[in-house]
Amino acid sequence: MTAETRTDIVVRPVRDVDAEALGRVHATCWHETYDHLISTAALEAVSPKRMAELWTHWASQGEDYRMHAALVDGEIVGFVGSGPARDDDAPRPRELYFIYLLDQFHGTGIGQQLFDAAVGKGEGLYLWVADDNPRAHRFYARNGFVLDGATQVQPFLGEELTEVRFVR
Image 1 (spheres, rainbow, N blue to C red):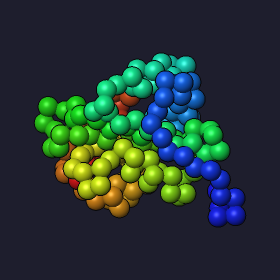
Image 2: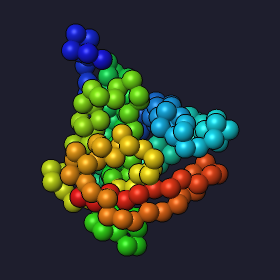
Image 3: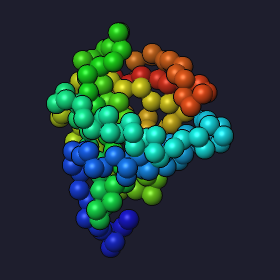
């Protein structure tokens, strides 16, 4: 997407009717993001239908949760979610749970728009991100996050993924 091909970009709260589209985008983003970290066999088990079921649940969360979708020309291309901290030793009361954007829209500013929709200006929060995801690390550093030294190994699609914690 260049300035000459600028399209209509909308970032808005997730709606119940978005679940199927979000499931497809979520599954695709996982393939694009984790293909170098998780086996092909594990990624092939990711079902857009299963992801849509998760989105049906997430879309119905209360007002403490901020779930937004980014649409380009009416089609969902990314999403973000934040809410109350889930960790017992949480360094902040809010957590950025996820932000995903289809690869073809990286570098367009849509990721920043998603982030801004889910995170208050200067709001303190934390997040976990794959240790081997330098693009995401740079994005979070630009948004005022720093690594706090915490790491965890999480089960992910039947395998393990090492994550690091960023705090702002």
